[in-house]
Length: 456
Image (cartoon, rainbow, N blue to C red; front, top):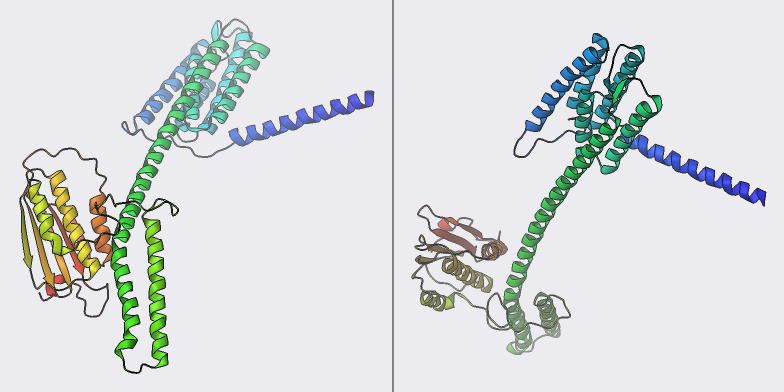
């Protein structure tokens, strides 16, 4: 039984020693470093905190030299060295807080030992000890700058070491005929570290809030972009599905239009028809995903962005007159100017041109009350130019909860077709939306890069 007890005591002792070693290792890693950690300039006051700390350093130097030499009995040379060190560490703490704390602690301990020697020898009487008033102020400034920029654990460790030295010098080493400053130092140092840690936590919380706000805004913009692309894809589905259906029907009818078609021709046409039907099936599946937040969710009865049913025919420029009449009925005067030879447009271009005009007129109704609008369409051989201009609003513009979806959608449509879109205010106070939509993909043979060179 005694052997078991001895083994247990030995294990407990080893456990305590191991913990002490780990604690000392952490303490050495936290406090024994020369890393640079500059104090950032204040957002509103710029370099004023640095100037204040420099003034504090000057006052600590002058005060420490005067107190140590006049009242503490310390020689002028040593008093000047100690005072200069205590003031210099305040400036050093602006860039390297941990080394500054070490140097400040060493300077205070050296000053306390020298003053103790003078007190015991009768060279000083009734002097503040172990820390002088100037030394207290300087070390408080260093601890504050330290707590503002290092983790709370490091600040608490530095405070613990400072309090332990205060206890050892005043309580254990002791002196004679002095005014004790240990309790005052413990109180002031603790308050300063708590204040600095709280300010650092508040600054980090504000920084994290700004970062989170930025991420939220970026995520909102990304989600808006994806929603607009999804809406455009839903609208273009019917256009693509129509073409695939036509391909399938033509491939089925083609053999009957040829007298004695070869077996190879029949097989190729059957393959074309089968591929078209499979592509049409996949398009319908893709549409089901785009029209629901989740693939397993059933289709919604209507598209809230356009107000049309999911399978309703997509609008084209043929319905421009009806769109203009609806805008006029809402109280906005609209003029329409169509130039050039109207040619059949690709379904995607026709739909996008209509949507750009529709969104631009909607923006006039929402953001320019009392303004007049003009819609201009210029048909070129290789594209169409769309321009919607409104005059300066005659009434105050009401606040709008819009998130910029309209302009984003118009830009996405123009970019999808390889066109360009320009939107912005005019010198007269109005607003202009101008887009050029080519009728052929970018880089297609015969496409003109400049619509002005196109022949109407």
